[in-house]
Amino acid sequence: MFSKETIQKFQNTPTPFYYYDLGMLGGTLDALKKESVKYGYHVHYALKANANNEILSVIQQAGLGADCVSGNEVKKAGEHNFEKIFFAGVGKSDEEINTALDKNISCFNCESLQEIEVINELANKRNKIAPIAFRINPNVNANTHKYITTGLEENKFGINLWELEEVVKRTQQLKNIKITGIHFHIGSQITDLSAYKSLCLRANEIQSWFVSHKVPLEHINVGGGLGVDYHTPDKNLIPDFSSYFSLFNQFLELRPKQTLHFEIGRAIVAQCGSLISKVLFVKKGVSTNFVILDAGMTELIRPALYQSYHKIENISQIQYPTSNTQYLKYDVVGPICESSDCFGKAVMLPETKRGDLIAIRTTGAYGEVMSSQYNLREKAKAVYSV
Image (tube, rainbow, N blue to C red; front, side):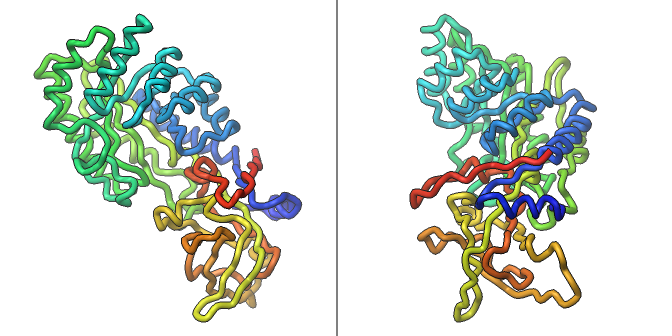
């Protein structure tokens, strides 16, 4: 992933920092567009994955729409001139709804009858018609981490199937609402594509229900959630968009003139980013040795929050590997005053010393965007390569 020249440049850059390979991002977008245009599918980038300005500029120039889950994301998508903006989220405030109405967004993905009624009221005050899609909970298991599963009845998201008839009937009575589609999102970091097949089959059933009730739908939105390879990123830098989109083409039944939309985030940006950190100390413990970095859970919270895996590399030592290079087992941790501030346990690394550079891979998604200033930490900067 990193050339010797790049690593040498890192030596003179204050750590920790987020490193983004914009050329890699461009290649991922090219692959995504090549496969999605085969079927005329519309892709919206999920800003929650990474809202870095340079990243957004590259994605907007590629012609993608925007998927937003807050009023500030809606504002930022507008600032970057995204044409089609969808606004999702289970808890939209009145201020956020007004922001979206003022920007004339393409669609509100709505998760409850009360939300739809509030949007109607606020749209009426502005003499506007708000386009909405019903976010429906399909009760499909995404087979992923429980914290990022969103499509089961036990989750807080979406309108449940048993309440759908009442919600649709009431919505049809609202004068400042236009029903344009249905929306689903079953989870994140999904690597088992059979979950999407199950979603397609359930979506077909739900679409038939709308047809039988004479409710026309302009579009279906199947959300995102396509996973990436955290364990061997160099082997799978670009997700298998071909299998992903062809599955929907095979199993999802669209009506004439109906469009299909996707909200993809992680799969676009994850592999283009790495968190680069420096070793502060190597500390011997009773049962393990510790590599203590100057990056912590403030820069990458996923391992602490989800117990997620990221590949960790000592890029100072791998520049010049030899047959005599000794590998040792380390717990790689950060400086934050929390025991959960750990990036990986029993990580095999070349013998590591103070001052070595460590790369934590696949952090382009849910890295910088989830960072904090806990312990009054300085915000880490971003560095780019084209």
